[in-house]
Image (cartoon, rainbow, N blue to C red; front, side):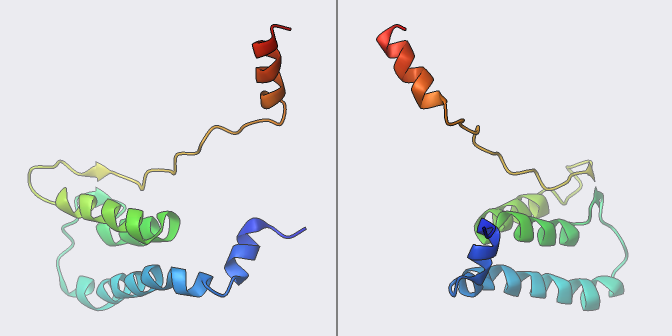
Length: 111
């Protein structure tokens, strides 16, 4: 059997869907390579905002990753103390077992 993530990665539209993330990560990497070394290190967060942006985009996708990055950049000012601020993990829906529908049907019948 193939893994679902492998099947999605091989899908012809997968490259098209990943393009916004890839392009944005490329732009952040250009910033990290050429602009950031010319500036004084002033980031008050760990990981840095650019590291956070790359991780958020890669793990959460373009829309959610971009929103998380914008919120993080909005915190970058003297009004926020900074510190450890990792990308929040995805919330997962509770997994259902195959017996749940049977148990629910039995409860409704009163057995």
